[in-house]
Length: 451
Image (cartoon, rainbow, N blue to C red; front, side, top):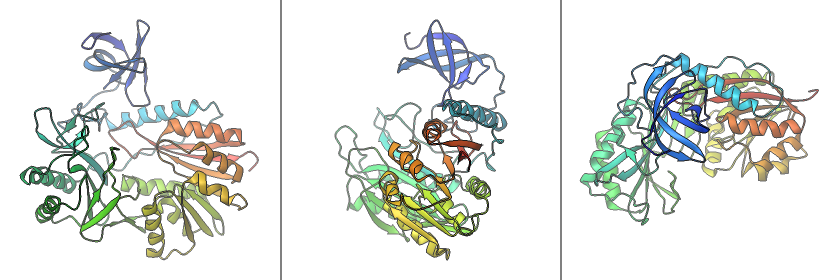
């Protein structure tokens, strides 16, 4: 089917990416801005992996009422795909998506607990990453990727997810960089300077961290850019410049130069202070993270005297929350900077019963094979657990596992693997950390049969 073809479709389901799914004439369609129950006129714009991609141009029927989106870039930007859907309906859709994903594990599942809504629909993110680029006309760009494109950027002058100070920082960089004639990094020739800009803000303290990722440093123009923006936006607490000479398009560098401040900010969450450096992981929705951590601690129950295993522990996250009542927490994390932050966070909060081991979970965990942990916390990246990590965890046989997942599809894979080792899902609950998007966190408790 050619691009530009218009077709009427009845949306019968939703894809893991949050698009509407339809079938017509033996073809499968993924339809942007459509949800189950919609009858739409859609325009085809491409094809991927045997699926025809389309965009809604008119709705003939809808079971989910729409609202006017607040962001002028809605529908083009790859971020807030569901901003026109009312929040209560977003929650219903997410709960359904999570249930569908987990059912693919083909294991017995109890009924879910109700989805936990975010206290904030907008302006909730504490971290945003922006890319530098140039349009086909040569216009300087600093913004977010257009949906479905890694080559097209949207000059984001306003955003409904990040703080107003954060967007002020982005706008200040966008003004100053062309004035200083700093070249944008060229993805084809692998030359240039400006690559990425990451802004992090601590909701509790109001501190802001700027991480500018560049392809060449030391560089006088880069230093001048930092000086100009720091003078304009005095709310910036710290600024680091990271050198990234590799070809991979990731907003991280091999080395970091400190331009201002300490190189880190501090976020307070449920009475625990977390130092966050450029490579540290902390959930992006701070206020909802507090509810997430309370949920995990509640499900953990009485952990007095118990040893708790915390896999993919990041900067200490939930482990430090549990440590206040546990006998000991043993965290494993592969990112050296995050491990350093986790150790510093334990010291900062006067928590002396935590140890943090550096390395990949699948490498470190087998070394703990002869130790006993009544509870394991698992909070992996979107790809889920490495197969060898899941096997090592199953061999360790903790009686209970609390799995915190940002991807229900990979959670289902891991649940299936652990089921073969005798684990069953005791309870599970979706937790919405990402309003206006199809993404959803899930907490699942798994227990050994008979435990």
